[in-house]
Length: 123
Image (cartoon, rainbow, N blue to C red):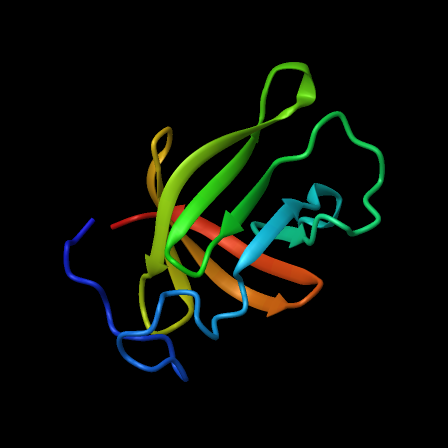
């Protein structure tokens, strides 16, 4: 991962926090029942999910902190801290965690009740 931050997301003023105006900030739970092709679908925690034996998630804070909510012992959620930033002007986000290293989440769609992303390796 480069030490140099990429340019702002379209519509985002230079120097603003990475999440300002991006539409992904907050906590999102994986709605794996809705995944399609190589697209991962996330919903807000208050979404009416079907019953599942654990559900992973992701969380983006406006200050650039990131949490991957992994499924831990007894199906409880386990926080894996990290950081996130814009990866390019096309809406991709680079995330790094203590456990998984760096990866890129290509944001395909972000609405208040649904987030669709495609994961790819960081370059």
